[in-house]
Image (cartoon, rainbow, N blue to C red; front, side):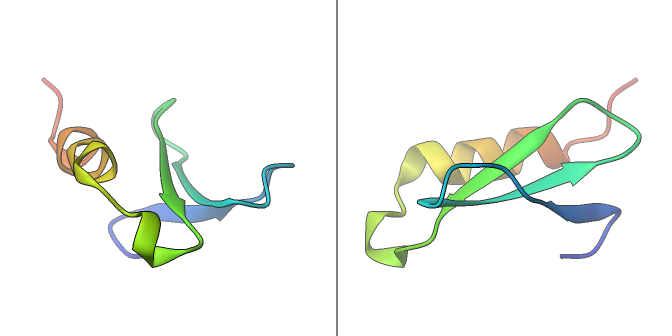
Length: 52
């Protein structure tokens, strides 16, 4: 993932997570893409927005 997001490894094997060093945000995605839904999309869109 680009734009400063780095893979974050945690104990949850059902999710792939990304962390941005300059913030406390964590984006989570399901490993099984068939479980991807609007909640994950919202998470991606909102957390990628620049903050003032």
